[in-house]
Length: 268
Image (cartoon, rainbow, N blue to C red; front, side, top):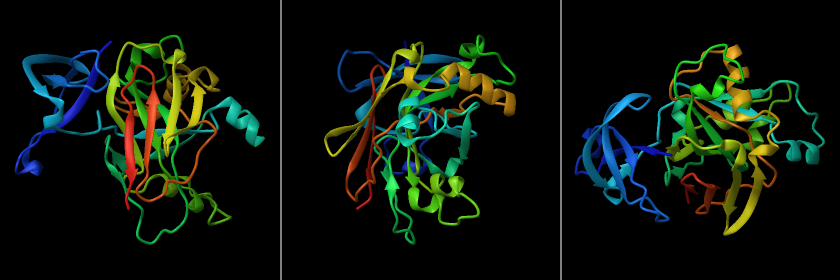
């Protein structure tokens, strides 16, 4: 198992610092302490430089930069049953554009004009590792690079604002509404994982990946029938019951055992 991050080195001119990536050193501590810098391409044979940096001296970025982020709706069986929703016959999904990407510890921003509810949705994220088109479910694992934590932030009130056109893309694609990271974990059995979302020091979401209607491998296969998936693309697998509005100044943490936890705070 390996964990990968993207980062910039802290400097007096952060905008000029190059984006770098590396592999976290497993030191059995609760928080990652060091990273080995790599060069090349994260998804195509990167090479270690043997340079080791302290994570505390770095500005963490999202662990990849997807060409697209695909979000699943109604993909957790227990949540669908509780809401009285029919079990879908095929994945139901929307897209989130790159302007919404937000790294670990980044601040969720409320749009100035919007005074409605903004909710969290803790989810497992699947990161694609190589170009993927029309793959079978049995081969899908060969195209998965790893997994990460996702908070699919949503301006809930906007979805049904216009009764003639549900605004899923608008509600989910505002700046900072696509939080994921802090790392990508490889070589892990996602089907054995459990997603927990901590809000106001309470576990508000707690559901196993085995409760997904479409598993990560099924999603990769089925989505690749619709569109080409590229290295770094991210699939957010859908959320369970227990979502709530995020209050100003409050923090949401998405925890998945074996992955590094994602934490973000709503702007005050």
